Length: 594
Image (cartoon, rainbow, N blue to C red; front, side, top):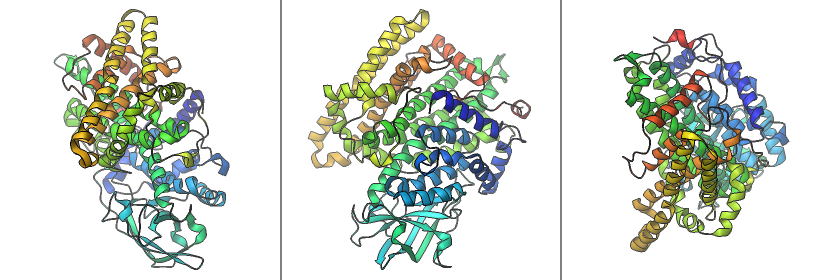
């Protein structure tokens, strides 16, 4: 979808939902917090969003939906989650649960599920089990083959939407011996089962997303016909892993939204509150904290931009891109929230405050992006298993040349993408990560932009290019460290804590490449006050501190310039993002502050 069209669509959704600080709006913080306090599923909000048609943007056009580019659904969910991550998660769970049908279902199966989704059907993804967590090949839910279908028996636990859902996509063992080819996926429609054969488990009380249905189901010999199996028998693991790639890539929208709202309400405070004769925003230490959080948010935005677009352009690399995004984005933004906590101070503890009460909910809700759909360890392990190949390929001239042709599309927000074909996603990247492979060319382009710039902007871009080159130069050092570690540890290398640490470093290098790519490939498409050389320099300083925690690159001049950019977006009521979507007019915000 063209950038202008996506911006217009986002504006329409914002207009429909209204200012969340206004209690008379369609989706106000006041009611969202009330649902959270009562731990009551937000049916009214989810139904409203379905009537508006949000779910249409995750339904393929071939089946009558409006899904074209994945980033459309990603950004719509982000706008919903800036109000309520719970409602956004409930909607995301239905779209995720549809992925097995989209990836491996027949045309008839896809149409069947889509028709029900259009009628408001909610879905759940029955993957995890109480005693096995991320070890899905230990799952015990079994599907016994009988004439005309299967009998499903077992329990799925900690499943979002499990009770409110009409249908559950169930991952079950079809081969008693298990193994990678021993599982299949079935669509279980609860209303079509005999009374008592499906038991909905008690809802679990949560730290964040308190109003979400997080429960489970127990099946006792539930018959499903052969037509309910999605994909071939034994294809379940492949389908589940491909579905997880989508979830890992898109769940970052929750973290981005939570920090956007947290930063926005913190700025509402710091721009009005005076202490020691100054606005809090103008106190150097506070200003530094605010601008660093903004820089972090835009780093995460750049990583997400490339990862979401990779699903369509380089689906064969999605294994790496999804795990990098899933690890790096929420991990970075959790630390960013800790910085905001210091600036907002005691107000973050006020659960019932009409303006600041939403902050503590965002603080809690952000955490779901860290552990859901594959936790930190799972994603680092996936990167670690492919690390040697990824680092070796950075020296391949042909691979670099090919990546240079794709990165302008991966990171150009105004560039057209090919049709999304989720079945083309692969489970291993074969050593390719276009972000790093295309980074040298992007760095050359950054130097060209620096030469073309004027005044302070030229200096900032020159320093940014120098720092980015230094950071990306660590790729060779990382390769040498991995080679030495492998030689020293032998068979223990693959499971070593040291390898996981190298995988963390790799995600920082990928993020460095992402911010450089986004700057150079979206440069002409960004709206004022972006792009900003001072912001890019601060972003790179933040990434450099992953290696050297006390590294100082920027000073008061750069921080002041980034604060100018941040203030423009805040006062202009635009999303803190490269997209800069216009937000709903602020009606209730001012009267709610005190």
